[in-house]
Length: 194
Image (tube, rainbow, N blue to C red; front, side, top):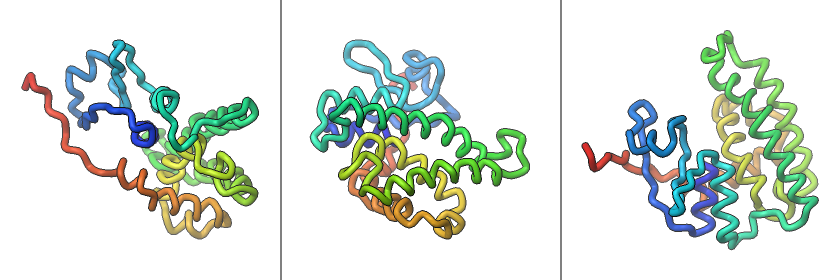
């Protein structure tokens, strides 16, 4: 989702191919043998297989909403936040959301661990409007889809927690034009070889 957000905001032209991960097209596996999404094939032949790489590529081409940090300090804070999100938080989110995949009876322990990180975002949002500062930025776009997944695992529990600014920030994201645009369902891409 976050790669699509950056592609949308940047206005970079690309061909969207929705694939069924249970029936990965040979064309996808030919350019990206690991078989995960997202995958972006550049005109140069380079293949980007990580959402953050796709985001940075698109925003470095065109960043009309100034999502990219503009100081070394802001970049450092952004990288730190993304690393926390993509590492520790994502690991706990996966185990909370899909405990059976990890041989767990439930994901409550991992929900508790992830809560510590969400409280960090809550504290930041008490001091400023967005994770990136006074406006939505790269850090917000990187983190929001994962907070959304966490919240939707048990929405009633999430909404009962003491993080009003985080909840408000998430609702604003879920109601944004960009979010609604990238959530648009695409038909599955079918190989012309079929």
